[in-house]
Image (tube, rainbow, N blue to C red):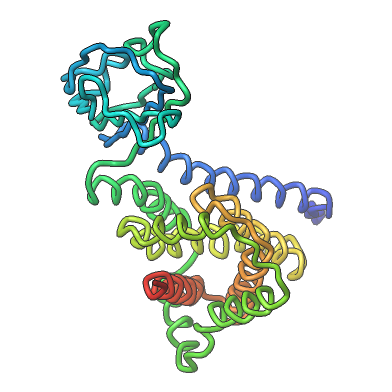
Length: 319
């Protein structure tokens, strides 16, 4: 007597696929949060800008505090305070007192600090900005999560995927180099068309801020590391889980949308213009084509790295 082999229903396959998508999205979110948590605990430089309305009281305050009077984690606070701060050219203009210091761990800034909360102080605004201390600290903060994710994914995929064969298929596809250039070319072409259609609506101040952010060495390094863990996660582990259970078009759609969300939803970008989303979608579809056509995660990593390198070169070339 032959026992009947249980078959997986369509509902079970789709439910399992949904679980895999949630796992992949959670891991991507965890990587992004890891960078933010690293920023919280690593040493930081900070700047306090306190804006007061005239007239200022005639009091004398120290220019330097070894420990900030409002937060013990803020130290070496150097302020540009002077006795009787020189009035601005416009008597009605606010007077800004700027303090710079360093901090470790999460810091809180009460607005304004208790030291400046007397009834004679007319506070207009108070703002604190922070930045990590030194390029090595920034590099650690931004790359720690992606590196750990890449190592974990390599271990997870290594049991099921022969990497030598994967790399061989990728290098074989590279005999025609245009294949590896397909994602970058698709993104550039679609972005150009979207820009011509007027979809690129970015505030000039925001655009300049983005340029300054992405020109930092730590962010440029992250752009070169990101393709490894992103491809291992999306077109490696997730694709391998979804492809047997879902049609090709649905697998492509799900993976591409996660790819778009991972980039457009990154707070570091600060921009979600239609042109940017369209370029991401075109790039994601091209990467999915490479994955299905050549069955190689390595090829996707190479193509994605070329795309990011092109973007980094363009960022550095823009004046």
